[in-house]
Image (cartoon, rainbow, N blue to C red; front, top):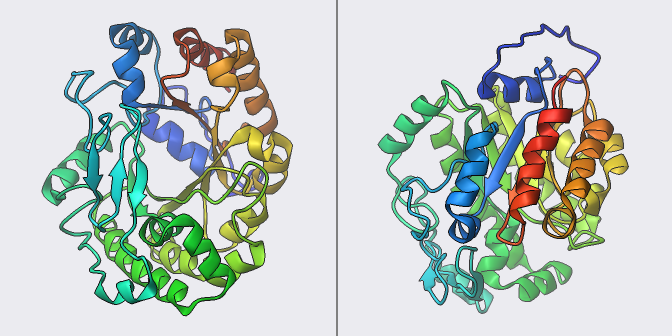
Length: 358
């Protein structure tokens, strides 16, 4: 609910689940939540030094925030080891050129649109992106996590899966030329994603998230009018059952995306994870503050890897000052790659300790 339209009930004894939920609901968290996403390559590089920093501080979840599940800094997920090639469940082949980071696309199965007739979509109830899915195990994990954490399910991706399958440049040309295959592929993926979404809706999650990088450094990858014609109705289809179920809808998108934020809000978006400085703090505030929860990405292009600890702390302060409010609506998200110095990682925690309490 937008700020200014709720009655805040204060509590100073919140766990991460309540803190993040209140940030989404604009009902007064005790502090701005911090979500740390620490990549496997970062753990592989810093190992116990990083573990000691993490153990000195607290956060409100995030992928890899507590370290590898196995405790082994050298064990990588499928496709994350240098030199490895792996095919995903759709038949796209990935090649890893930097261990500890996700690989890059090497080949796509739709070389021309006749290949779409032969494409078999994977069953999302049986397989994930790189292997089988154990829904009993997933359900048990959700039950464990929801006692303390705000729990996200996955609605997968749309545009990214389309260009993984067709190739990035060929797909953009197809969009510009209004090739009917674009609509066919879009609907195939949306139908597949909806099966996944409805499976997640059977579990007691708080939010279902999507991820599609739509921006370059300075503009949307396609014309906003084309986005509204082709993709907005597709996202609306996927968001609708989630909002009807009373859950939040979260969307991650790197790059400049200001042009489509109002459209995403219009079709039901309640949480957005954009890049901070690419879009600008003030423009993001103008579009989002008091309307949706911003899970704002600290600047991982410049400040986190190349700034000083003082720069990092000032950046965190500016983010909270420009985007935060007493009611909520802000989560600080730090994506920690192996190019971020240990001192800057600790600076994120220290800045949040100083500036996040409300």
